[in-house]
Amino acid sequence: MKLKTFLPGDITGKKVLVRVDFNVPLDGAKVADTTRICAHLPTLRALKAAGAKVALISHLGRPKGKADPKYSLEPVGEELAKITGWDVRFVPECIGPDVQKASAEWGNEVLLLENVRFHPEEEKNDMEFAKKLAENFDIFVMDAFSAAHRAHSSTRAVAEILPSFAGLLIVKETEMLGAVRDDPKKPFVLILGGAKVSDKIAVVENMMKKVDTILIGGGMAFTFFKAKGLEIGKSLCETDKIEFASQMLDQAEKLGVRMLLPLDILAADEFKADSPYSLVAPEAIPSDKMGLDVGPETIKTFTDVITSSKTILWNGPMGVFEMPAFSKGTEAVAQALVKATEMGSFTVVGGGDSAAAIAQFGYEDKVSHVSTGGGASLEFFEGKILPGIEPYDVTE
Image (cartoon, one colour):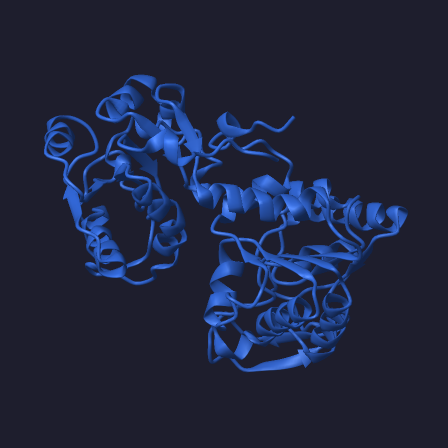
């Protein structure tokens, strides 16, 4: 996939509205994690270096179309200023007189506009609202990959009003994820985890013919165990997806794709960090226990597969990694990706919980790429054209 991005001549002296994703976790009025802010810095620095005036627009949380102080972007502006040393001016609206005034007074500062989701029109991809967003600017740059699967006014409609370009983060994401989706080196292993089979159905369907091995862990493994006729105790199971799991097991066999499920399970009494647990075989999960992580035999087998592969895509943890007792499977997968990367393999971590997990273990800089988009990366690997990226696709 080739995207239309900006050259210095496109933006010098122009007022540029940049859609970023500053939907960051807050601890009171402080930013708790700056990962998403820092992901946009290459784009913002390139714009400033070319002499553009830069204004940023983003959402934060789910304010449901109403102004809500706890979802204000003002603390994010303060954090951006700390990180960069730039003069960041917070504008307490994203449309109307406040933006017009800031635009008229614009010096060298970066403008950060207030949460675009304070307006219900945003999530409706409302064109009239998009015109109001665009009216004080010359150029639009879409850099929010993690919001690119949403057709909203600030991610899609604005691109139909202003001359528009993809930002450097979106270009990087599509290049890295596209290398896995469209041209993976063999052997190629897909690692899937997390709670729900339903979140990964389309990914499995689209990638099944491209992979050599699929490793399945996390809560979704128990739906597959159920499809094989095993009893799973109180473990998580999507009963309405058992038939799909059964079909995928059959399809993998027909295509010659190895689909490996956990060989041993840490089974606990209840979903608690200090719950007593025992190591059991999948066919021997007690009726009063639930599986919360994979065991050492699974870790060894999965590690061997990962470290002998040339392309590795990981989406979803192996267990409840937020609880130390049940984090070993997920950490082991992260460590295997690091080892594979050191051996020359191409390793990509999908966003969401997988990105959170590899960051928790401190390995995010030791793999080829960690995506900033959870839902967006899933839809990308489903083979969908993301509405926030489609306007910039100039692939011949």
